[in-house]
Length: 430
Image 1 (cartoon, rainbow, N blue to C red):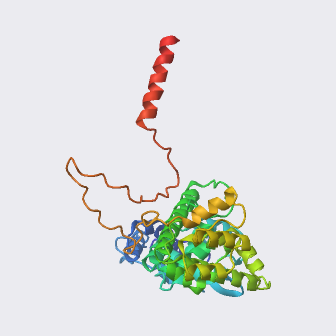
Image 2 (image 1 turned 180 degrees about the vertical axis):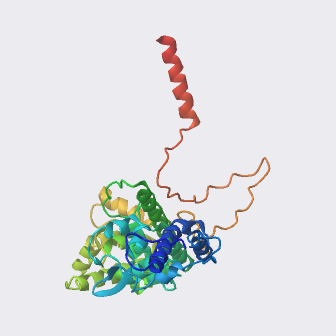
């Protein structure tokens, strides 16, 4: 018999062979997941390639195979323990060094230490568990929004782009106003190129090309999901602004939503009331008195986001009664709404605010969604008009691009012609 052993691990030949097969299967599973090949077919190929056969033709052939998923939660053959979780909610997970080290450069760096116990206190234990299930070819369980969101965070931190893609598509499929609020609560720090989103400080350049590509792919899936979430918040603005989860958003996430020009609430009063509720909750979290001055201090410039002059009558009175604006600003809004002269001299800044508060919101969406699931599939475009007298249709929203490397914009025809003409003149008089 030909026996394949693992020199890095002691034990019987059968156990060493099984571990070697499992390590190769888990490594190839991480590499082949993005191609959409079923896990069962990949595991079958690993067993065929790593089977143990006899060298003696007279000896009966013996084949030893093992399912790579058998190593998941296998305490007997594990040689490393992870304690994962945040906020005191920590769980213990057995693992295998050579299996996990081949799946990700992050795992390889973690497992380079000699300790038998590794603390992972920067990833939620539910997301870390789904990450292990994926690497061990176990079915991932992304049934709830919270689990999918936490798994996306774990996949991004451990540079597992195929799992990040799976989480992004799952969250996009069930996306509504409430899910979009949950997604935006934590996803902003994982985005790299989302316009208007404040991200974490830039990471140092990765020396490993594979790690850099994995990081770019993970960030691209997060950018696409956040883009679709903002479009859902624009379309379902009333449901989002009346949701109690809005009060739990940090200031940066709230600003990213309410500052959007394409936000389409049924009335600006809905936006003003949502800001008032968030300011009250912010004062309670900071243990401050619920005074109008403290609410305005909590909101800052976000108090100017509602377009007050689009309201009239009772709605305008209710919006001004929330006291999101200073007394002088409320007097200016009331006077402009009634067509009266301003009670105080109006400067350029105040006049700019009054004009912006009277400008209607655009009816068209900001852009097309990124096609991540059946929910975000773009609608069929109508055929273009034909005929000499057909009027040119106005340009619609464009499909966003989150490519890792932006290409330079092409120069127009006029600019190229002028550049060539100038070069000819220089050559003639040189």
